Image (cartoon, rainbow, N blue to C red; front, side, top):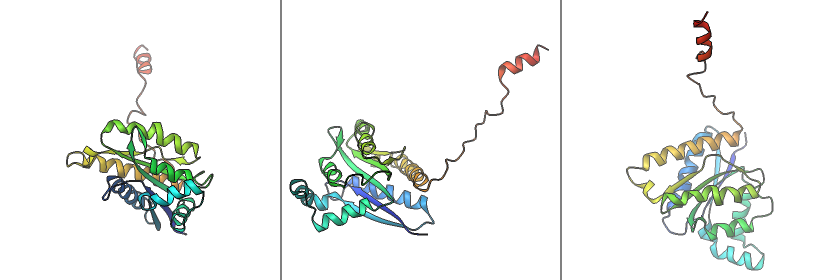
Amino acid sequence: MNPFHLAVITAGVTQPSSTRLLADRLTAATVAALAPREVVVEVVDVRDVAHDLTNNVLTGFASPELQVRLDAITEADAVIVATPIYAASYSGLFKMLVDVLPQDALRDTPVLLGATGGTARHSLAIDHALRPLFAHLGALVAPVAVFAASEDWGSTDAGRLGERIERAGRTFAALVTGQPRVERIDPFADVTPFESLLSGASR
């Protein structure tokens, strides 16, 4: 079986970056869920090509360094994205990268969404900004996304964040491999309806 190619786009602007940390953990969870299949990961750190992106937007030509990263995204079997949230939306740097991707580059490509922000109120940006963006691009957006606020990295909430990341990785792996959803057992499935009990008692 051919290796599975996973592109990871991280748009954090600081070093180190909580956005990069989230991207790395989402990647690790996805790779673990895809095991034993071999996964080749290509990380596209948007910060590294910020100047190249600006030049591309102005001139329409991608530098060799930027083109390598664009090719990694367009040729990937699936994509993980992580962006900081500013003013209730994804970062401008992240949007510049999306703007210079070839048309239909992400059509029918599974995409897992991740975002970071100062407070939990920014989590709405995933559904109000990120999800519509990738729906417009024709991507297959994973139903489970992860938002990490600054407080989520603390000792109290880190465990819950880890659980959300692992769940997102499992769900994304199921999406990209076409695995059927695991059937949930309904503990009340075999319970006799109350109406039937009443009719039986009246006989």
